[in-house]
Length: 295
Image 1 (tube, rainbow, N blue to C red):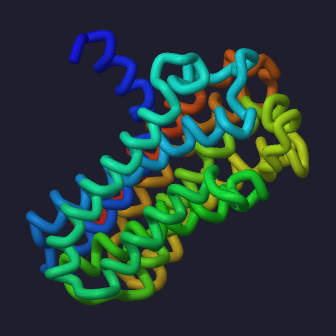
Image 2: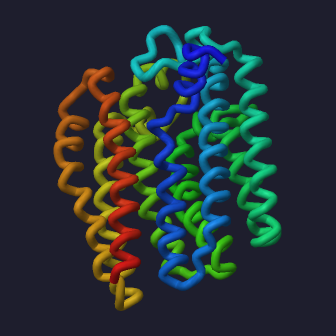
């Protein structure tokens, strides 16, 4: 594969979105470590599976959004490889199946350890990734994408990571999962604010399209603040882990991002906010997890 071709596939994988795969693994594994249930092989395989499912979802979105007219020559965001003609739609479909297939094959190791519940989580996650933008009723076009991201990159991913290592589950683990889910949702919200005009034309009825740009900015801020406050509830609930409150430090770099998001109307100027929000997610997960273990 030429260097150019490899670069095209990297673009299609959307590496700036991959923190949504890594962050839940970090949190779930840290909580498993604290409960003396950490299992290294399960963590590694869970990371690979989560990464493959995220990439597969991005591949599927690439050709599905193009087919539905959401990605056009007027697009303001990063290049989409199907829309730009860099990769043919049929090739992208095959690549999507291959990536999801690899996730299933690797996931069988986790199923062997964790049982049918892990199989169920994995298959639902893959199906959700496909029908987010594909199929006759793509729920990402109905304003349900935010709910999908909140749940699947939140309590489902964190809870699944914790369970496959400890073979147990607790309410505080699921609550911690909402921190990653909220911040992953914030990444999606930035994307939807940037693409509001194109989405409106293509009838992609995201929450931002339905309720407006100001609502989207408020939703972004709500996700950041709630993700920072939730560790305080976990500290009270567990009567321990006080250092996990360090995660609230992400509010500091979030302030200039909020100001840019609320004041800047140029879609091209919003592209960096996407990557910086992903950095907030990763930073929050590392701070929370480190604090949880050290407390």
